[in-house]
Length: 92
Image (cartoon, rainbow, N blue to C red; front, side):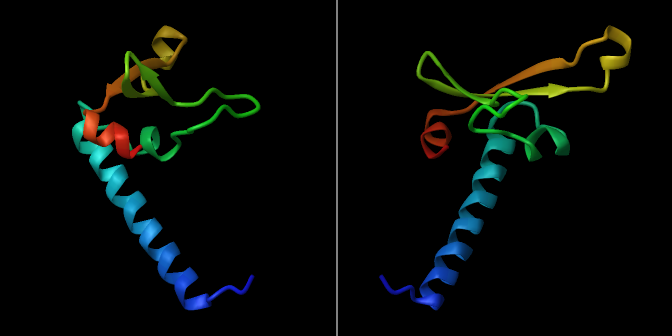
């Protein structure tokens, strides 16, 4: 197999652009806009110590984030569920 460096670079650039636009679409269409740290750390699979943030509930993609501003008052983070429109969920 021989790699074509220009084609690889073009593919990576297009992938980055797609992910930027997808992030924007999730941010705009997923209900109340998220704060920066909420969307920057969305995981699509479980980690060693942390659960993923993307789920499918009744056929609809939902992004579950945790917001920590009130954690000091209530001793636990606030859970925020953002249900995506079908078209955006299919892209995710």
